Image (tube, helix red, strand yellow):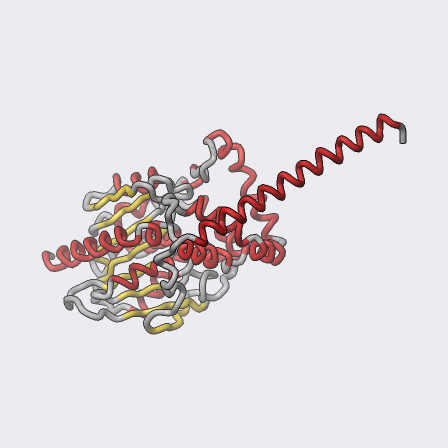
Length: 357
């Protein structure tokens, strides 16, 4: 090797070393920042996230898949108060609604894990669709709610899509047993327009690549899942940035959301991705319009932007639309008191509509 080649190699090595050092410093800085956030006083530190509530039961879906359901009876409240049925979102589980289930004790509350999520069974990939989750909701209602018992359906993110899929398949339920609908951080279609916080031009450039990347990674699901466990600090930072807008959000809450997401196998994330991107439930609006509705959006929601929820609200006549400021994609946890109060008001509207009919 001549002198010139050695010098080039030395320069290349130095550049690589600087790059590696810079990357390592960035990781160290991120870990330090996460450590500082976690060290802050946290009023939610003792909150019992993730504990079962009420009575647990197993409901079989129409394809035989076991669905995990938790039922809590009302502690107080009027006899005509509707039952609240909570549907959670993509990569999460029924504990997304922790605060609402904790605080709305005057109502009977039913929460369930969507297929392949939480404690529910692992779905055949061919059944990982929004239409199927709508059919699953029908099975949960059949097993837990009487034919004449009024209910209010509540959906966050993919859970809202589940409610819309149920409405498409069972329009006669609305105005009958179903007396109200609450849709939080969700979309009725065209979700491929989300930017994940990227400039629009970059989001559009990356969009065609995303399905292929996810499909490729799903073939190495076990490896991806193990790396997700190793990168807990990075995941904490990403979820805090992507899921929440309030920088003072409880570190305990962020940690709990990170655990819910990490507990969802990557193969499941990949299986549901196409149905989330391709679903179109605009036809469900005419059915939802039979009952009082609540629509809530976050101004900094990077997954289902506020404009998506605004479109739903514009298509409904009896709707309370709450555009929450300094709010991300996890309103039931980030602004839980506001969501709880809105659901309580919705339930009162639903009960009033039932009495007037």
